[in-house]
Image 1 (tube, rainbow, N blue to C red):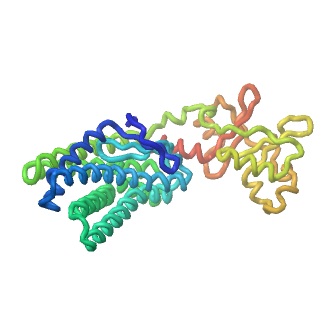
Image 2: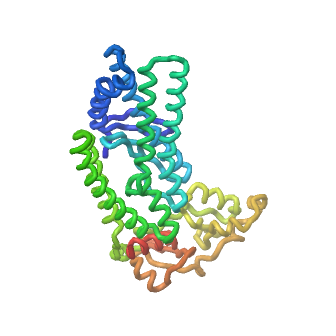
Image 3: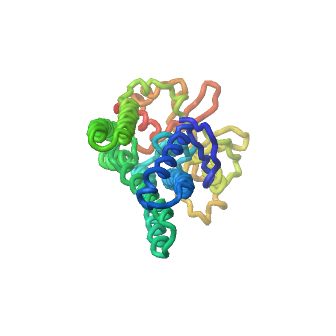
Length: 372
């Protein structure tokens, strides 16, 4: 879903548009100028309808961006990086670099888009009421009513529990919370997405023959897209036991540069803040050899006001006493030797002597992928 045209940035997020957006924009402007606006506000010049049609299309694109900005803003507040917002054939999509870490964040991110569309619908409805009350242009009132309906449709349709729509992601978040595991929740939500996509495509046949051929064909295309997307997500969440054959080197976390023998707990805290994925900070002795590791838990045990006074060695553990694994071992081999469970880590030693860390949360994610 690559963007063919960069439109700019909003809140630091790049915004782009697929070529199909401009095709849809033309048909929307034509439909507004020739059908929708003349029926909502009759007996006006064609030039007024066409001008309002172009403005309406710009408002429609802004509505799509607003919907995705809702997702993006909440995602960024929950620590998920937003790579780009792309407008395309079926609306818009915020491309996130990774998923939320917990079902609560997943729920908030998914719900933010429909909430933004509902808010936009409320704003345009209030504007339509205000313009009409003041005796303003009927064409403008008709345009605002149309934008209200568009945003209401965006809000409601995206709440359908058909993964990967927002409603399907909300369903996954709820199932994730109940099951305690993300992948089975994804498969269940994706299965419902496939079922609803088929139901949508079948219902579209009735629309084709009873209501409008154009609307019916469009809905069939949307149903097929949803089915393919949900099917892909369902397959991607299938059990993959071979992931446990990956080497520790592939899943280990890098450690920051070692701190010297005179480092304080505050120094450790600063390094960990600069390396949020690092569970440990290496500490060297007076000769420059790494002899101990300081952890986040150790920092947390020291009152903030005292961290600049207390030496880092007071919260460190000797590397001799730490569990060790080789970077050439497989994850399965480590599990058979050390077992698995929450909140543990092991020191990873490379053949050249460099060190990293294997963290329980990373291993648990691989186990979930393996078991499905």
